[in-house]
Length: 84
Image 1: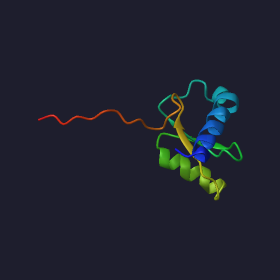
Image 2: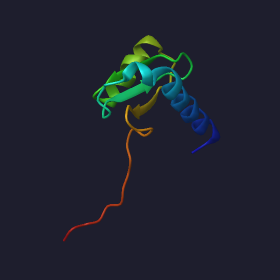
Image 3: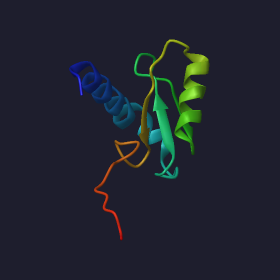
Image 4: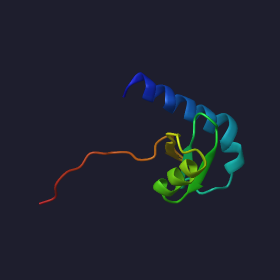
């Protein structure tokens, strides 16, 4: 990742932990949250793409950061093996 991408992720995770998480107590940890790091605005949805679209509808120039409520990652990639 680039340093700009790292900085965006750091800012989004800071916003989540310090300003947003307390408002989402009791929400499903598997829901996606898209965060506009410039405004601090966010949207929660079961589908990541819809959360992003909802934030972009309000902030057309934004580049929302996507994660799950219960994880700093939106997706993870594990090992994969072919079963014969």
